[in-house]
Length: 428
Ligand SMILES: [Zn+2]
Image 1 (cartoon, rainbow, N blue to C red):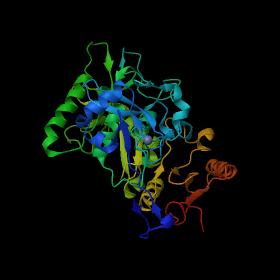
Image 2: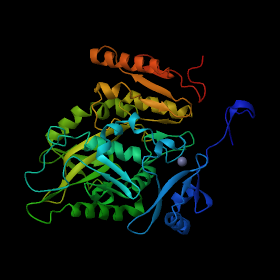
Image 3: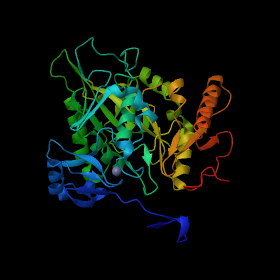
Image 4: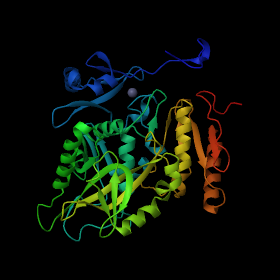
């Protein structure tokens, strides 16, 4: 039990969430299974054989899928589409797809018991003339609905890895956690028919004793993009956190990634650099950096004749320091305030939907507090004035009023309101 407010008894005592799962009739902690899958291999293999894995966050338990990797390692995954049924503090909890951009592009993501297949809008292997230089809906009709674009893909990865949510029991979250969560999220997933683990290079956390091995794995990834035929082009993805942008010697820019050797950067043309700064203005802004924001980059890359990573296109996602996605520096500050107040919450991600899309913006709160039933919505209202913005704001407000939803609001021209502890939102 965890005691809140330093008093025992009454409503101040909140039961601490414990991540029990049942494998082949035995009750164990999920965090221990995840930290040491080899030590639990017998239980996992038996649970896989008789399909008996259950998550005990709800009674009488929710079915889990036990999958195994090509290397023979077993791991637990959420039952296809079962995320919303789990307890909000559970590692398998995901918000209802209709509450995020995922509902809009459901046909781009096929989940089955054996794994997930994703349709990415642009090809990973192509003949000259088949591939475009921009991953957008004008080049690839259906992007954002029947297939994912780059922002959709990074949002999918984040949401599936459980990184769009935060629970009060989380102590901290660094890049090591992000990469581990991403590895399990991508396991058993294919992108355009290819194993996601082989086409998405997730920059590993830096450790002095792993530095050489990390360099070798990046080089091996770039080598895998070497075309096996002169007429063929191979492309893949690099996912990492942006550290700095440098002017390249001849033309364009070098994007340096955190955790990665400065000897391995991603080359970005002048045109793409300008487009990224325009399309992802909030993420690339000085204000975002001042708020402690991090920029997560998903590059769609090919191998240059000299062996360098050349970005064809990219998406930028802003997060706060603990990797909670945020649409602006203000949202990053709000995420920090929610964490400091001991709240559990989810950030609904838009995927490839245009944020000005009336259908989506009317129902997408900036954050959802999951430690209260019904949940409280959080809205960070930007600079007042723009007509379109004001229209969207009143549409959203009316939507919440119709639902009689509790709302925690911050208009950024005013001081941020004090975030109350769980159970007290909306109370005087
Ligand atoms: Zn659960």
